[in-house]
View 1 (cartoon, one colour):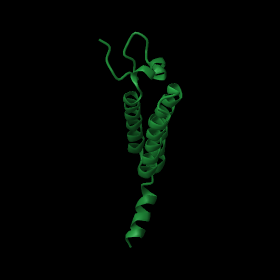
View 2 (cartoon, helix red, strand yellow; view 1 turned 45 degrees about the horizontal axis):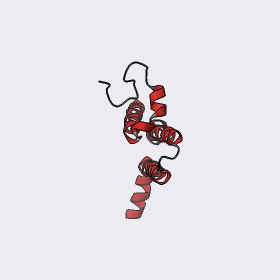
View 3 (cartoon, one colour; view 1 turned 90 degrees about the vertical axis):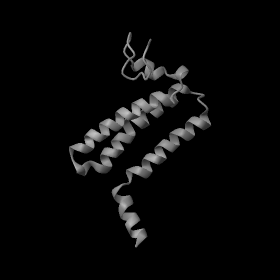
View 4 (cartoon, helix red, strand yellow; view 1 turned 90 degrees about the horizontal axis):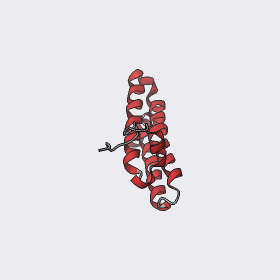
Amino acid sequence: MIVEKSKIALKAHWFLPVAVLVAGGDLALAIVDSWSDPELLEAAILFDLAILLPALYWWCYRKRGWTTLLKATALSCLGIWVAGHIVRTNTTTLSARLASPGTSGWLSCSSSS
């Protein structure tokens, strides 16, 4: 009975284990690679957190209506913010290119003083 309920819950909420696997894969890659190719790793982390996970969230819960799209958009914003904090300061090449010149930019996490 518990196994059946677990299967039903996992079928309805498959996003959670997939998100843990994607985030764990990013973390493992960052540790194992030790930032040997920072541009590629930064792009992969930014893609996974800002595009892939919100898209998977929307796909899993799309039947719930417009609130799912709003939550996926918020998850994308959170992914951009988290990616900005995960990526080392001296390797933020992609984020620096996407930021607006002369300002702190929309991807920059620290304010310029």
